[in-house]
Image 1 (cartoon, rainbow, N blue to C red):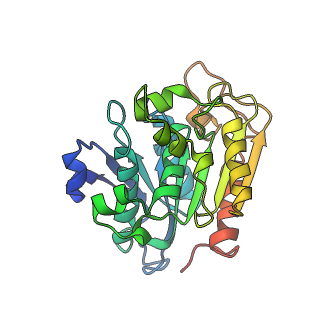
Image 2 (tube, rainbow, N blue to C red):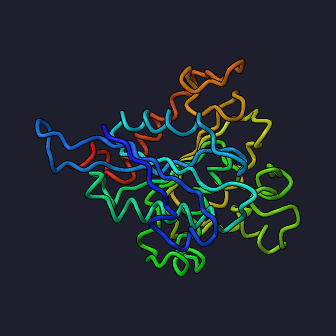
Length: 285
């Protein structure tokens, strides 16, 4: 395995002009002569949560290592948080996706099998990229083509979605400020922006999440169904917000965040991903 830290502002000058501090950290397996030096692996861009005020360590490296072991090349995006506002975070996520695709050979990654995964507010960012990959504030600003920035799949864990009555208001305040234009708030209440040409979606949430209510995932699933976007959703009966892997590896100090029935979600996602994008097969040689 090798790791790298990439400053996205150094790769995309437009980000530097807007004060981006985003860092993309790669966790990738090397090409091994005893296996197959030409082998490529699907990739995941991981967006940790943190209410757009910070990026959680618990939803970063531990998640990357989990999915590295499951056959993915993994990239963790530490995006710029408040007081920076939208659309900088979207631009950083798009830049990260474009960078992975442009450098797929270096990372032994499959440019055509690259997912984005997000947790809580990071899920909102991952979903925003999956909806607005071809928006002018992305392609025109970064000088990239839409095909470079569109994810091939989307995975959301207890994601912030709605800006309405069930909103996690702190996330929207950090992302948009306290009095955003109504049109922008409507657009970024993402159940209103679902489109039929977005990537397929895997969602999971807990029914008693008292920080980001489960209605966020339910509203998004209903919008996906209306637009006939393929999706799979898992609602677990119990578990606090911010479970990450729901194992000892990601449990916060003094918190009960080990939930065995929830910790199966990485297996469920991997199986779903293989069915959707690999036809049920193992990663391509």
